Image (cartoon, rainbow, N blue to C red; front, top):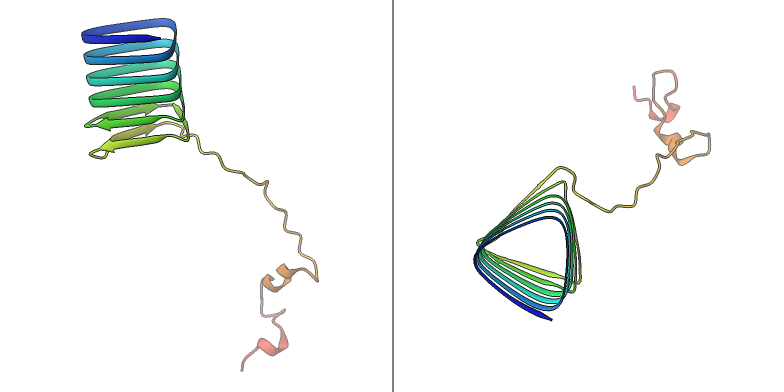
Amino acid sequence: MGFGLSVYSVSISVYSVSISVYSVSISVYSVSISVYSVSISVYSVSISVYSVSISVYSVSISVHSVSISVYSVSISVYSVSISVYSVSISVYSVSISVYSVSISVYSVSISLPPQLTLWLGLELVILHTYPPMKMKQTECSETSAYKNQTPRNYPVGSIQH
């Protein structure tokens, strides 16, 4: 269990692991930079006001959490974010993700006014793809009706004089 209050703070993390269980975090006028980091939050509440967050090569997992951001900027590069049973509220916020993956399960995200979100690079879209079909034309196939029609092979009934 933990409680954190930060006012006018700067945080720089390189090669870090953070695990929070039953925690509350409040940040006002803060800057956070994370490089090569893993963050796991379970049953947590996070409130950020006037904050900037930059994550590079990071993994973030949130389970049963609430996140409130007001006047904030979030930049993620090469990162993975997983949210399960989470609520995220953003007010006047900007989020930029470059080569990042975000997975939300039973989660709600609210942005007021609509949040500016930029996705650059590859966006993960899960689709079931099928291999290309081989169309083999036989005399009795349904595709035989689509034969190329040339003057020599027009059916007699379709020629109009």
